[in-house]
Image 1 (tube, chains in turn green, orange):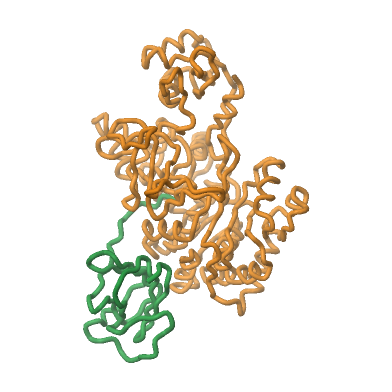
Image 2: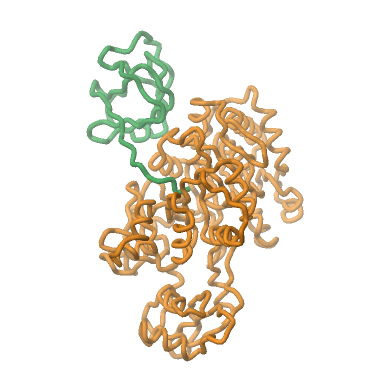
Length: 96
Length: 496
């Protein structure tokens, strides 16, 4: 998945931008995401209904995939069924 | 990837929140985003190669920056202080461009360039008018967000290219989205053609911190804006800080209670000045930022706690860190290398190399990155045991005397310890015997303690060694600096 690609959730309003791509299917609410809003519809699966937060970055355990939430929604993110976690921000003082 | 995303996210989150204040006009994130979309439609329709800004800071700067980004055309902020011949050369290098700002000057200097020229107000009005129905489409173009001409203190200006991926890498890696409180306000007084002017727009918009633009720096205007807009954050170059402190000392009205954080960079900060500022603003946090145009702004910083610690510590090594630029950002790699490119250990002086997503190192003519992606900054420096970075000048400024490398900084530091020396610059001067020898230009306080040449030579000889002793000494009224407080060494060389 090319960095910069925007993916939309099939089951909620979530939209992400790929910062770092890798292998595997990127899912939201348990359903695959795609560049054009997938037609699947429905509700997020119960185990992937924690929601996404605007402006948060999400990574997999290996740190190979990184997504930026650019529109929040009710589903939560996973890759091949493995939940992604938010990347802890490094708190830096503003330098600009 | 497109930096337009940063404004889009802010506008999606809270379109009514005030994004920018300039000359009494207020722009919400939604209005700014709409104007950027309209500007993009106009830029695409105009079919130009670059979008240039030849103007002081105003709302036109972010509208042009994000409009150009959406249109997939590089944004080129130009230095309006350049002499006609230098500016004409730059205009020819970006033709045909959509130039915003000083129309008359563009038409006079490059009449054959095929430029589309718009005054500031006309550009903004046309962007607002085209906003309705303009598409959100992001065009990729060459992937270049900004092209910034370097200041050319040592040679002809180079066209540094910053890709969307560089600037986004910097912002996403260092700024948390919407992290600012609703009342936070950032005062921007650096000119729009400086990298700090661009990074201030990007990071404040992403943090959703209100931007307060000061079109041209003046210490009294700065103090007034801090008071009236309840400014919380500000970035200054050292000369600006010095002028503000001068005015406060002279009794200018200063209501600075809102000021929480002051960041500074862009030039050497005299130790006495930062110590004075720390005392004068005891509740403000200070951050020293070091970066280059080619690195999308900051690559190392000395944070607020480190400032206060250095100010109050008894440990000389910790105290000395007030003269450092802090530690590299966690998102970049930084090394000191010798002339053969071999990494050096702590305490050894060499050239600063840096690598990371935000590091472009790319010019229109060529890329300066090595095969492994490292950018040789041409800045000289060293790291202490704890990884604090100390700058010693430009690698190109090194004086090579009979095969021995001499850093001008060490000689200047010693000369500045003399109570009668106000300012000092050391440069290489031609020497039949040594190839190059040390020449120093000094600014001396008038008075009876004015030191003679022999006294200055003895001072350098005692503190350093005989090879550092200046062969030639000239006295000047003032040293030549550019408007950002950068010493123009090429002009110092000309006086010898």
